[in-house]
Amino acid sequence: MSINIQSDKPEVQVELEGKIYVEDAAILRENLLQLIEKGKTHFVFDMTKLNYIDSSGLGVLVAIHKRAVERGGGIVVKGLQGAVKELFLLTRLNRVFEII
Amino acid sequence: MRQKIMRKTFYTEQEYRDDREQLQHCLREALAMQGGKDTDSLENEVTLLEIALNEAVNNAFKYAEDKVAVPAVTLSMCLLHSQWLIIRVKDSGTGFKADQVMAKLACLCGKEEEAWQWGESGRGLYIMAQVMDKVRYNAKGNCVMLLKTLF
Image 1: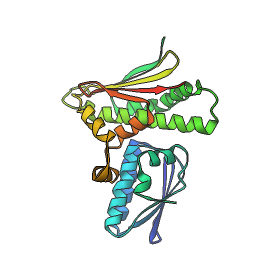
Image 2: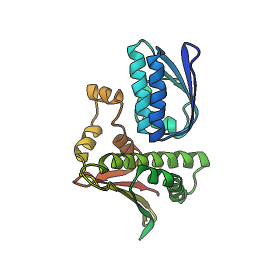
Image 3: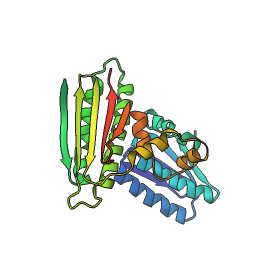
């Protein structure tokens, strides 16, 4: 798994690459919660190169999105494809996140 | 005819992680038997199956430590009549009320559905049920069978 976070602008860019397994989801959660604590509220997730995520990773995205929405922001997801895109649709997360 | 693919007991999550790549290979081999699929479709199916399997195993490890000295998760995979892929995941714990949870997930609607969508957990069983053709827990709730029809 590779997480590339650019947080120097108001909108945080998060690029996820490879596979996010349960143990990786915990790391992702830590990194993103720190940014929320620093006052970041708008996140754009690029998932073009992401080819695996499961309920643990999806749970992290929802957790961050909820906190961001509470503070007037939210998560935008882009680049969904293949099985990851299918998983978002299966779990109806297309109704939770803005997907572009 | 029953064709064994693998059977192994894992005592730690790390042991399972070490075998994940091999398990993915087993799933790919089983799905490739279907034939007639392009590479992208096959890889998508392999990934979704891998997700369902990992959900079952992650759940099992979550409950395996319940009131036992040596937590363990046993995974078995076989082909039945070359037609059905059957995966069993059994943990050493005392189980949970799987039938009740599955029944609730099967009829999500209205505010319950919205609460579930915005929930930070609780998607694992739902994903298993969506990806597989059958998901059955035993009465104790410590063993799940996942079935995928290949043909």
